[in-house]
Length: 56
Figure 1: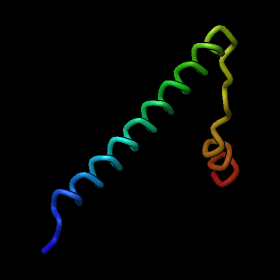
Figure 2: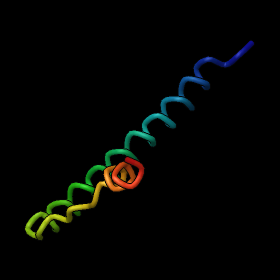
Figure 3: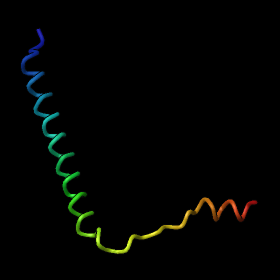
């Protein structure tokens, strides 16, 4: 018979680790944003618009 308690425990630990990893990534991204927020924003060209002008 399957050990559902052990299966649940393993799944719970894995999900908890995944949540912690996502929270850490979010926090690091927010800190990076705050460090660079005072800088001038970078404007990227819309390559699709340039491609449509060539083909149109």
